[in-house]
Amino acid sequence: MKKYKAVIVGGGSTWTPGLLKSLCERQADFPLEELRMYDIDAERQAVIGEFAKVLFAEEYPELKFLYTTDKAQAYKDVDFVFCQIRSGGFDMRMLDEQIPLAHGVVGQETCGAGGFAYGLRSIPDMIQIVRDAREYAGDPWILNYTNPAAIVAVALERVFPGDRKIVNMCDQPVNLLESFAKALGIRRQDIIPEYVGLNHFGWFTRLTDREGNDLLSPLRERILSDGFLPADAAERDASWLHTYAMVQTIMRDFPDYVPNTYLQYYLYPDQVVARLDPDHTRTEEVRNGREKRVLTQCRQAAAQGSTRGLTIARSEAHADMIVEVASSIALDKGESFIMITRNNGTVANFHEDAMVETVARVDAGGVTAAPFGRIDVFMKGLMEGQYAYEQLTVDCYFEGSYKKALQALTLNRTLVDAQKARAVLNDLIDANQRYWPELK
Ligand code: NAD
Ligand code: G6P
Ligand code: MN
Image (cartoon, rainbow, N blue to C red; front, side, top):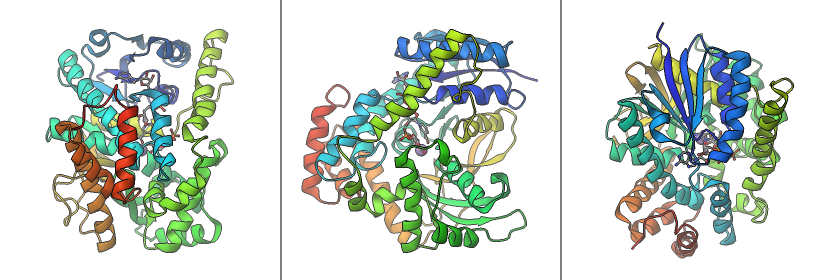
């Protein structure tokens, strides 16, 4: 059986240990000859790279492994590129959250003005990664989940139109499916979903078991009566528990479908702003939680020469999805995943060129969405505004246009008021001078 070469771009990511573990557990499904890690931050990546050596000695001894900050060495001859970078790091994420909140509007990593700011930083870096990968590796598969995945997907589609070897994905639908399964007391694999929307802006419109029996109605009853928790609630920070709980609020108002949790920011922006504290945003929680845990335990693994007793050395839905998608491509399995892909008529009454998120078949030819049919007026109205925001954000980047930036933010449901949008935009411009093109 062919064995593959892969590189993780953003090797220093807090998500890397989980991905490494999942690669170990799925050796038979996605056989690797060589794995590399690449990052622009040598010091940060080295901590995780040393953990990787210990983990692979235990679980993947024949795997060739290296970590590097040299592009040529990183990409040479790889078959798969996994992208998980954070342009600007957590310092800039903090500002993406704080600046909008200082103006009384939602400040979030991927949604609203924060997502806009992060998008303008991620676009050039992701374009560069695709170009570098192709320069040094020929034509590898590029699996991207760098956020804001919605904006990155639209921008990459602009630069590399119709490119089937660029694959865009997000783990939130599968996290939700895991949570539905737990609420219903069944296995995630036994739920057949229908899902539609844009990334971080979608709905489960149908859930059935393998015999076609409706599962959405019993799930709705359960959520309305008992609330809603993530499948891995015990490991979640308080803000994520709150986010999942908001699914009940959304379903009280709009019971037809089960929403993606990110819709809370668009449907209840005032309530979200009232809850968030500009002095203690999600970045602080991540740095004190996931980041600290990962870096501390990686150092511990290197010091003790083993991964025994460490909680980060376990695969999770996020990592499992990435490896399963890679496996489905490599082994031409044709498995179903909820993916971000060009609409091409999948949603019959929506723009052909929109990057929609929906159920898709993944095989050696790439990602092919299953026909969805028509979306209803409420969804269409919401998605039209969000799609226009995505398009204008990407236009703003390529044209260096202040006007498009202001239009994008004004259309975003987390802002709405054009004067607020202008004030937030001006502060974001000041904060992002090192990263953004000049907006005129
Ligand atoms: P992190 O800051 O811990 O890790 C990112 C790493 O990328 C850092 O080590 C950084 O030095 C490196 N990096 C930054 N720019 C780079 C570049 N141009 N080239 C190479 N490396 C670069 O962040 P994190 O919290 O672990 O998240 C990583 C990314 O994964 C983020 O974009 C996050 O939003 C994304 N993510 C997406 C999903 C999804 O559903 N799509 C799920 C989880 C994480
Ligand atoms: C979900 C989203 C991702 C996001 C992740 C972590 O899985 O789908 O896009 O990156 O949560 O968010 P956090 O706030 O914990 O960094
Ligand atoms: Mn996501």
